[in-house]
Length: 301
Image 1 (cartoon, one colour):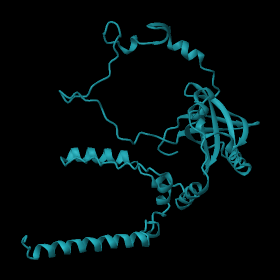
Image 2 (cartoon, helix red, strand yellow):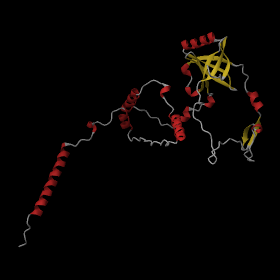
Image 3 (tube, helix red, strand yellow):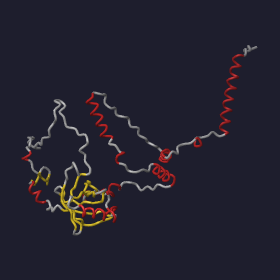
Image 4 (tube, one colour):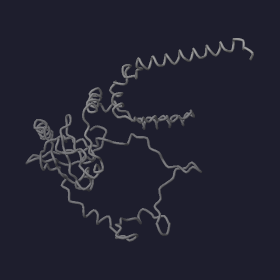
């Protein structure tokens, strides 16, 4: 890949066929806005310094090593050479162990994606593997040492090349049963389910990553620009939180089936007549009161 440095170079082997390949980072955070830590009193950048937890004296880099805590405050020292000796030997080969259906791997195991490309001498073998997997609708499971760790890698056809995704080990993935164990068993049926399905059907679309902008990053860029130009800073918008008391009513409103005129409470004829009668009686009483005040009072005889 022009302009990018390969993260790893080696070979991929399937059966008795092998070819040279290279891994390139498929996703990167290098374009994100980053901040430095600044001393508010001086405006100078703050450097990170490692301090001895007991003496509170700075510790130079060459005096630092690794340690494993066996008890509170007690450590066994692990030399970097001892760590290096435990790393499995690498022959720089991604050896395919099995071909599996693409849907067999739950994406909760996905770690980090890399573009896998051939070197100039192994293009035919690479293309044969790519096209064979695409026709068979399978992915490959391979293992090798990447970045000083033995890694399991899922390899799939991707455009003109392959994409290799490092996988989390089983012990690294937390149990979904434990995550959901406190959820009550609820089964939605009837109108609620129909409305939910209707709302989903009206929102169907295709995934276009370019359509999803990083609003946080854009807001940071605007903030930095405003500070540089001395403009008024953006104001935080008030978030309106909806709290529907009736889920069914909220679903109806989301589906465009809000209250119609027919749903509004109507007065019955009896109630209407009663109300009109009360109004006539009130008017009659007011009229009598006005007449009695206007008429001359008779003296007692």
